[in-house]
Length: 261
Image 1 (cartoon, rainbow, N blue to C red):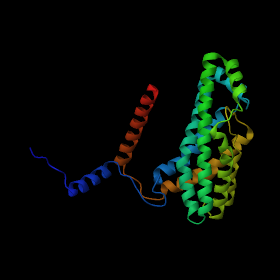
Image 2 (cartoon, one colour):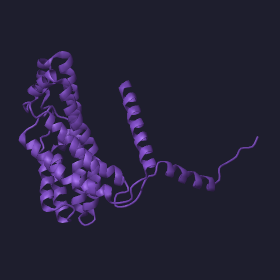
Image 3 (spheres, rainbow, N blue to C red):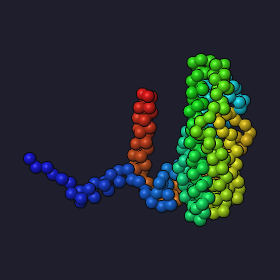
Image 4 (spheres, rainbow, N blue to C red):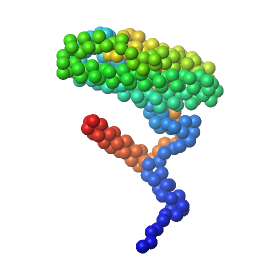
C-alpha cells in the first residue's frame, strides 16, 4: 500500500487559497492585533463603556442601591453591566495599537503605560465577575441578603487588589506618551488622562466624574480608531461578508458552548 505526501509546492498553493477566502493583513505598525481589530476596538470599546455608564446613571452610586436597581430594572442593569464588561475586554486591542504608535518615539512610556493599562483591564474584568455573582445572589436570595454579603466581604483581599493603582497609572502614562509623541493632540491627551478618574471596584454606579471619564476616552480614542481603519486598503465586499458571517457564527457557537458550563 502506498501513501501520497503533499509536496512543498502543494502547501504553498493551498495557503494563498485560504488567504483569499478570509484575507488577513499581517504587517504595518501593529501586525498583532492588526489594523481592523485594533481600529474596531478603538471605536467600539469606548462606546460600549459609555453606554454602560449612562444606562446606570439614574441610580445611586453605592452597591446597595445598585443591587436594588437590579431587582427593579433587571434587564436595564444587565445590559448596563454587560456593555461595560464587554467594553473593558474589547479595549485591550485599542491599548495595543495606541502603545505601538507611542512606542515609535517614546518606548518607555509606551511599554509601562500599556502594561499597566492592560493589567488594569484585568482588574476591571475581575470586578465584573464579582458584580455578576452579586446580582445572581440578589435574584435568588433577595437584595437584602446580597447587600449584606457584599458589605461583609467588600474589603476582602484578592490578588487583583494590587492592580488598582495600575488602572489609574496606565492611562496617565499613555496620555503623557501620546502628547509627547504627538499621537494625540494636547486636548485629546488630557481627555485620555481623565479616563484614570473612572471609578473602580465592585458594583460601582455612575457619578458625574464617570460620565466625564468615558467622554474623555471616547474623545481620545474614537477619532484615532477612524484614522486607523482608513489607513490602508479596504477589503472587497465578498471578503467583508465572509468575515462578518464567520465572526457572527463563531460568537454564536462560543455563546452556546459557554452556556454548557
